[in-house]
Image (cartoon, rainbow, N blue to C red; front, side):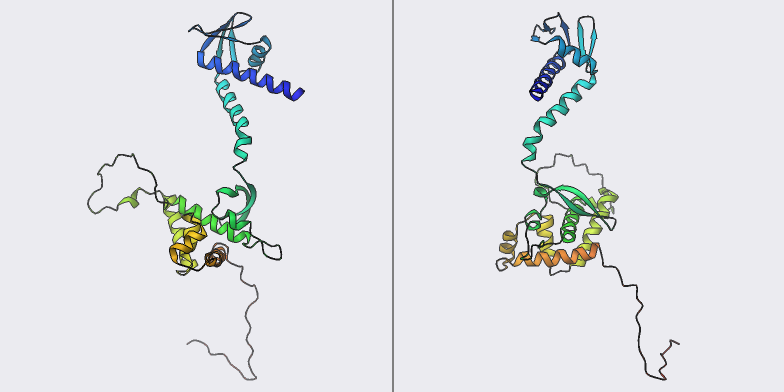
Length: 265
């Protein structure tokens, strides 16, 4: 009962602010609102007093004007109302991310990840078919690919083209930021680390967002082979981003009695 009353109170306040923002300035005669263009709206005195206490409305006699906070209040309320509808298109889950070589956790929408379907696969033992490190590596490759501006444009560019290039200058590369250039360099190193045999499927799935069946059809691979190739590629990429720590033990060699190592001259 109390929750229903609060919702009605919030809705009445939103209707009042919406009318006030559209009119700019209104007058209150004790029973309702009157706009300069003749429009009228009903509002209770409790709603008016509540808006004034919140600092959303300024009152000078019978004249009412909306404060800048009123528009922000309406925007927040709209976002709260849309949350249940947006939630049906989200699958939020904690994921492992790599930042400067250090693993951390973050919350991500799995439905936006190119590896969302593969992340749910399980082995017969119940373990994840793709380790978290491999998924994080694929998403990091996708992030660098996007940050570097390597994603092909699918829409028309309306930016004016002005011929300001001087003779001997570089082309479009000179317009890239340092962040984009660094991202492109990371993508190139990642592709080199994966190797020419496996880098293609990693780029197709993680960067170009292609499905495994599409990859198999375009590359004329056998059915269900792309999944295995992608797993091998992501495991190699995971080792590139987070190489295993070297053992702290020094190597030892055994020699027979009288053995003397050859020293460089």
